[in-house]
Image 1: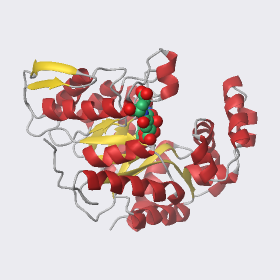
Image 2 (image 1 turned 30 degrees about the horizontal axis):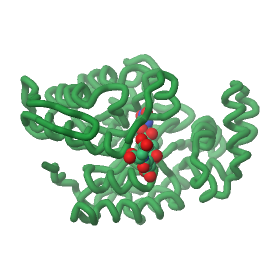
Image 3 (image 1 turned 180 degrees about the vertical axis):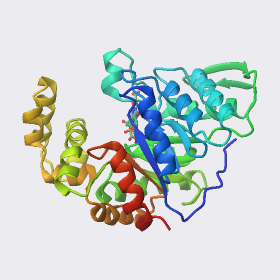
Length: 341
Ligand code: F42
């Protein structure tokens, strides 16, 4: 069974992503502000060294009325897919129709810290998607998967509709799989240089499932920073760009003309906690490759470019700006009117 979403096909939608690294009330306050400012979705990132994503989402649902919410993204390695499906279904009972399951293979660095191997990521994501769909549809699930075996499991409560699954993807095979089986493909990128190849793989996945563009949301999850002061906006994006460059696979660095050695130097400086060295090594080219940052005018142009390429949902990801609440308001007043239809 695959949920056929009834997405509005042409309108670009907007999401904000928060990292739950501050007290719960603060993330909830930002989410309330985002809802008031016209955002359509709020995503909360999931890493076990931050606050728990499901607790953060529950609190947000208690204080918002309209925005769709979801983990962006959770993974089936830390939490077994049955626990994941149960968590999604519990959230969806609180707010039917407003909950999306953002799913991925998880961040390798943090999984390594607790010795969780990221085995068979493609198969794991495929089977987890099936489990979330079947369980949240209220079906009794029996499954003889290659990874998961489930015999006759049905939860003791119901929700009106199954929870849609958006899949976080970067590699070519995961992009194709996400388009084939997902309701959305969450792509962690900012630049057309990354979206051009991504669309090739998305189309491969769609063809495999006899689907077409418009059947899945194509989501740009970008590092984002907006401020009226160009330099302040770019400075705020530097730490996020540094982490992206440090963890970036070689082919993607090559695509942006960034030497592997430069990424290695940033990675070494991060490991030492030498932030002065980190920031001195982040170049303008790195910022432009891995973040959308600058004045409202700069951001408008870059978002509209992604929209022309086929992106249907744009996520303003961390850091959002030098001051999160001010940048949300600035985005709402001076960017949103020029990028939404
Ligand atoms: N990760 C988090 O932990 N937390 C987050 O909040 C988060 C947010 C997020 C948002 C958007 C997004 O796009 C990604 C995000 N991520 C987050 C990262 C995400 O969890 C993944 O780490 C990230 O998407 C990288 O995954 P990937 O799509 O590149 O897939 C990896 C695993 C990969 O190597 N893919 C290859 C490919 O070509 O796509 C395929 C690998 C392969 O072929 N594996 C084989 C197999 O069968 O699966 C063999 C492997 C084996 O076990 O031998």
